[in-house]
Length: 198
Image 1 (spheres, rainbow, N blue to C red):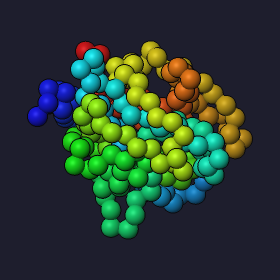
Image 2 (cartoon, one colour):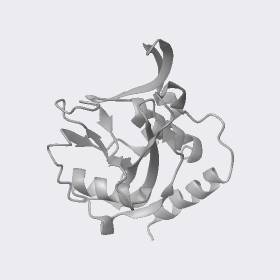
Image 3 (cartoon, rainbow, N blue to C red):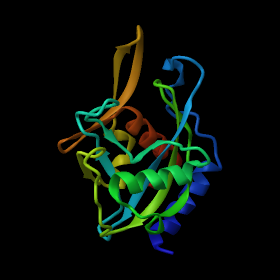
């Protein structure tokens, strides 16, 4: 096992053994009670200079969330669990082979305002992995440092009116990419579980 895998797995276990009362959840904005199961892969790249996280930007022509930054993922198919779905979606979107992914575990379920119950799956992938994005689902990909994403001071809290209610969300500009919405909330929640800065 790599040092990064061992370290992250230890932080994951310790972080999930305690309460995390300040997690972000969006379910109060949801329309209806039914939630569609989905999963995303938080793929931490084991880089010598420091770990990073694979993120994608969705094409601007997509029907759902066009142009937004996302973690690879999507809806569960019949018979799949969250880990299987996250690995399949990472393969479809970025060409990542399941055998190159070392899964640590699922983290906190995130209920979105658009009716999805998203299970994030934390994993480690090797540096130098061949990334082959599917242009139908990925306009660009990038990998900001894990330490940067898990530092709460790097997130700006904003608000907007949505469906007649004030809605708070997190926002981060990283180079040309704006990280916000569900992706921001999932990464912020991970920072409440993984004490990377310490």
